[in-house]
Image (tube, rainbow, N blue to C red; front, side, top):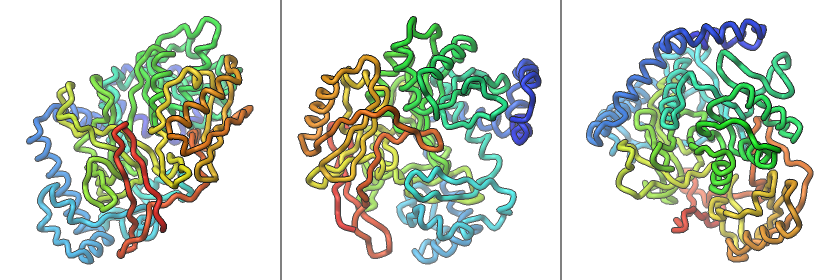
Amino acid sequence: MSLIYHAKKNYDRFPRWMLSAAGMLYYQIPAEKRYGKTFEDTLRFLADTEFMSRDEMDRLINERFRYIVHYAGKHVPYYKNKFAEYGVDIRTIQDIRDIVRLPLIDKEELRQHQQEMISDEYDPSKLMYITTSGSTGKPVGFYQKQSILMTEWAYVMHIWSRAGCKPDSSRLVLRGKQLPPQRQDNNWFYDPLRRELNCDVMNMTEENMEKYCSAIEKYRPQFIHGYMSAITMLAKYIATRNGGLRHQFSGILAISENVIPEQKTYVERALGARVFSFYGHSERLVIAGECEKSSSYHVEPTYGYCELLDENRKQAKAGEITATGFLNEAMPLIRYRTGDLAEWDSSESCSCGRNHRRLISVFGRWSQDMLVTIGGAYVSLAAINIHSDEFDHLVRYKFVQDEPGVVDLQIVPGKSYCPQDGEQIKRLLEDKVNHTIRFNIKQKGNLEVMKNGKYKIIEQKIPLTFGRKDGRGGVTYSITLIHAGYLKKEVSAA
């Protein structure tokens, strides 16, 4: 076990002087002792396999896929029954091409059959129980091995290494991490053991952000790690701050929220550092990140297998991310529908030299990131893709819709905002959607984040549906690829 894992339960109770002293000694300890054997072995494995040939990588994927399917068929009651129902003989499942013969599962099925999906070789009381944030209104829970924490941390650090980030790099953390009351210094706290400057994203007032900037200049973290909405707010404050920020970040590691192109462009310009986007989820089935040479998401092949399924549940160039995890045999999830949308990169290879499959245009939960036109078409927020100086004059904005074809754009104006900016934003948005949506600009004093610190840029009050039910209790939906680089969904009756 890692030292971090042993200290975690009582970590927040340690006095500050103890953390400061421990921080000085901690990074003198070799990494394999600090993070444990699981972390070190995984990191070494990833380094050894990173630039494998496609044939070698395919063999490795086949091995991991075959293992998890055979294991599930032998040790997981749910899959024993499900495979029998679909007439699947696991002895005939030999490589990844056979994945299309396996049934799909979704969150509702996971809720209904949770206990049946645990391996008979594991005691649930000794597993971690994880729940999603429930941003769609229905949280879902699942069990994972304890060791998966350090395994995933190795994958994360492997991906971040492309940005120059190392396990001992210092970070400014802007995410929904609750600060212990005894550790708060003006809504921020510096953790010398983790080398993290943690700032409260729930209360990003100008007064607090000035304190954050002073703390940044004092501790000089190398990277920003957090939600893009919070990073954008801080960047906008820095852009208007007298003297700017007297510190240069090495990179920006964006997590957990969709990265909107105009946010990325603005933040990179304002902070003078590249944003590296990252895709992952609590179920720990697919993990992907940008490389140093491109902005496409390189899917880590040994972490899990990613499919994109169209409205006919066929593998396609664009569609819903459907994932099979390779790391958690305690509760395997095979062909699990995530609800996220993405598109495969059509270019043959990446100049970085990695033979990974690559995603572009990764969207979050489709039902949260769509606007509805007057004609009933679904338009992804990424479709709008506004690059306009007028948006730079806003502190924060949100799209709120409860009627097809009409959207309220709630804005928190910045110091440089003027009424003409609002008029120009309205014209730009309506032109982008060919006037199929009318946008009403409404000024607000503040727009709150959710309880977990994330920010919901679309508040969609219209019930959206994947489409009609199929004969086996599933759903179908229509996805059309638009060459401008976004996905559109067509409404159909449930």
